[in-house]
Length: 164
Image 1 (tube, rainbow, N blue to C red):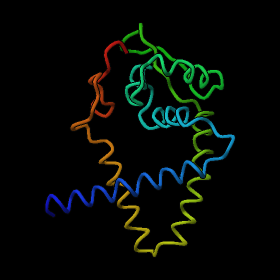
Image 2 (image 1 turned 120 degrees about the vertical axis):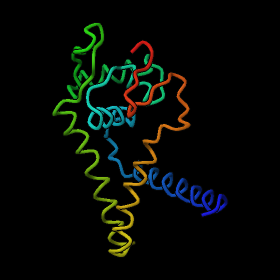
Image 3 (image 1 turned 180 degrees about the vertical axis):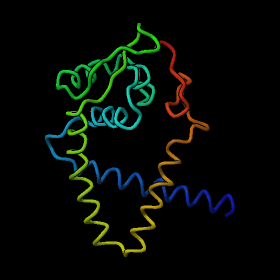
Image 4 (image 1 turned 30 degrees about the horizontal axis):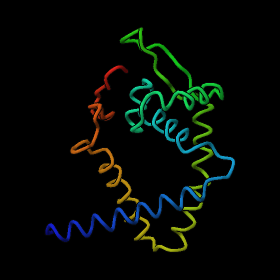
């Protein structure tokens, strides 16, 4: 694939993922948690306990910007602070069973809508191709190369942001 073809393919993937992401946001229940709360819960579920600084870096926010959200998750018992075994001066946030349940409940409705849309719009072969493409999209999302991260943090690389 030439550079121009690759750029056209990248544009098509970007446009498709943005449109699908918007539609999935629309399919969220009205009384759902905020996108930031769900994003934090999803990170904790996927990556395990993290420092507030690491969560902020992963969400590309300042740690102070997460203070209310983290306090809300703790108040709702969806996340809990625990000491960091490697550095007792730091605390880690971990998702609780209630947090996992809240995340699963939120995803269930959107997953059901997407499965129904896939059944209506796609052949079996296209459904399997899309499942395969989803794995590829995950790999691309985790690519740290050229990641614009002024704090020098990328969670999958195991680096910690300064002051975390």
